[in-house]
Image 1 (cartoon, one colour):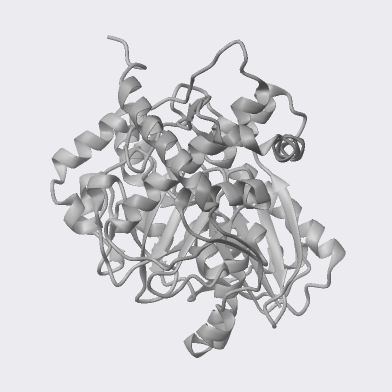
Image 2 (cartoon, rainbow, N blue to C red):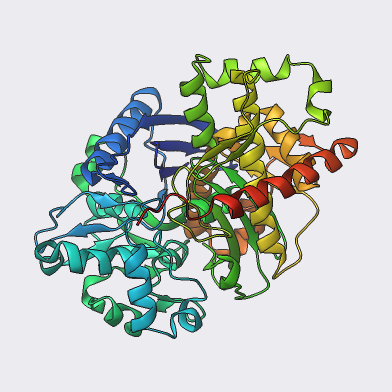
Length: 491
């Protein structure tokens, strides 16, 4: 058996995977995000550890973990987790959807004009490096005390093994990695005032980074098993869905929304804010578009409109007369930029917008507009991916939002291709982490067997007679952003 631990933004999920690759059990422990100032997004790393411990204790209470052979880690990317010389946390971690470092991005670009050549990516506030440039200017006392910089999941690794390590896929999101060589770039570290000594060692995703400490092993009722490098949440999710070969593509509907596609070697198009990263498997790369708010928009509008629950909200949509959707009246539009936006705009100051409201607008219209707006944003991301590579016709979908058949059908129609929901789609990153742990034990020769496509539960085909309606509405959606861009800034 193998364990996969996924540190998400909204919670920690752990899964137990059998030798045959089946998910035997899972446990989840929730997390919350602190937003003390405009554009800020933070979490206390100690809360990550407490949530992980809680989930593991619950799993150990229900299942015998004595036959576990290895543990893999997955987690939210880009977070700046800062430790002093005694491994104490210096401040709350600055998260992937934090937008405070926009000016620092411009500064870093000026300091290191060759950043795109080294990393293949635009300098964006979400990445880790600009966060450290911001910190150096605004919290110099904290900056001076930094002994180690870790990514979120690697803080868990430190607590589990006492080792400082990360993996290629997660390190790709820092702007410190030489993307073709898959090693830290001294030039990029120097540009942010850091040294190699402050960074964890970089491993491939299926390499062993250390061993579970005796103290933690006893607490979790585990042997002292190897802990494997693992991957950033999206790369691990792709491994979980068997998205490992050129052109295979995945859509992740979590807090954020991601289009992930395996590329033919290292390729890049930073002009449309497309990410070009190393995959969690050796000698493999991928492109990735990211919208910062996806399923989180649905949670927000459900709370705003008092539907009671996401399930109740989707049930109301499914019961709505379908002819209303193809009306000549486009209804309400929604820009899903509640945390700013990455692909394709790279605009941390972008804001969420409802447009087209009237006295007749009902709560269900707002919910429908949110689903459409997020889907249009994902199509923008798909266009960015397809600007550099061809993809397979069907797309695998994972994440909490993928549980809604209504939304998957809408996505198939708007994106214009089949959407496949597979076994393990609700625990994709944790499943991928467990698969990487199995690979570490069995070796690369077992790749095809361990990282195969899970069984397909459902396929959603585009409704072609609705495509024209949505494409026309999407054009208006895109015009709306251009019309309101910059209005949130007052001078």
